[in-house]
Image (cartoon, rainbow, N blue to C red; front, side, top):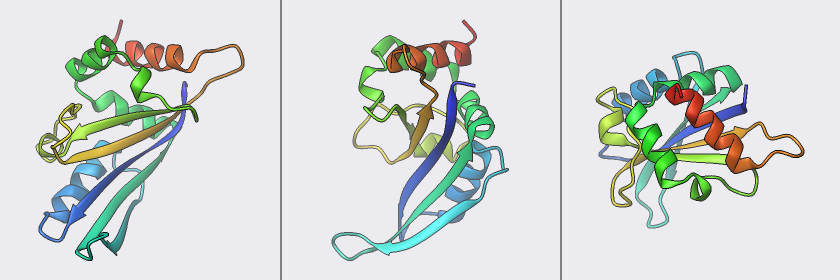
Length: 143
């Protein structure tokens, strides 16, 4: 498989269209996983929501297959080292603006609203985490 599971998470303010965001997350996760909404206050006290969806391995892989090939190619070309952490998670940030339009486009803009993805890579002894991530992306691209 190459991933154990994954999660998409979006932080939304009181002025965001939360229903549209929920629909986008449902589309991104294949509609099979439960969407969790946590209402809270920001550090400055403003009301906000964290909208999450957790997926098991098959749904997580299907979710990654939805991402646009150009975005996956760009991730490979820019190197995945900065996207993989010591706990063997692959981190992906999608443009929220494009996501609500039904497009899975990776964001490289730190000022943009994003959907944050976190995917647990299936790494075995003797394997390098970055190589596993690169292999996963290449399979998703179809190379």
